[in-house]
Image 1 (cartoon, one colour):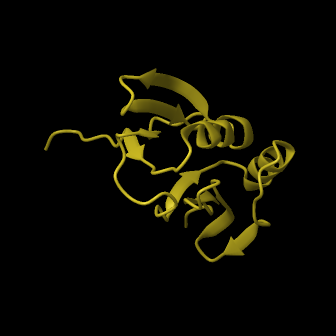
Image 2: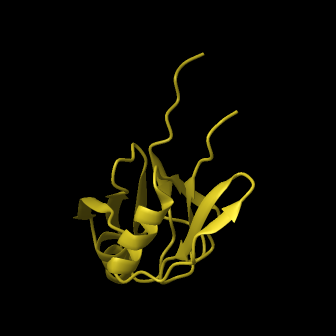
Image 3: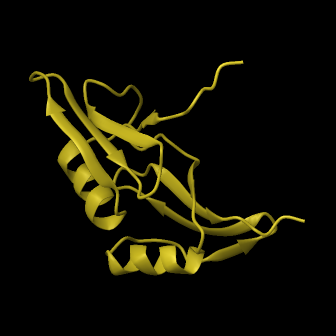
Length: 124
């Protein structure tokens, strides 16, 4: 079997500049690309710190209703530090939630696309 790596996930947004500002300023993502191809097409690629997978937002590149993405999840080593960082950046996030399968913090972008941060529990 050939290796397959998930490297880009499209996230539909209503306002590209507002979403880009949220992801870079509040969520701490790195802005990799922001390219306007034409009046109908703009491609913005953003990557969470330390991630091999990025998201794409833009105009004319993402199908779906803004805010329709649910269940995007990133794994962090320290949920308390991640929570503190997001709060310090001004992001609206949930309290840390302890569940049987991990510790979580939840947030949404300005359109309502939903994200989770998970700290995995020790195995065994």
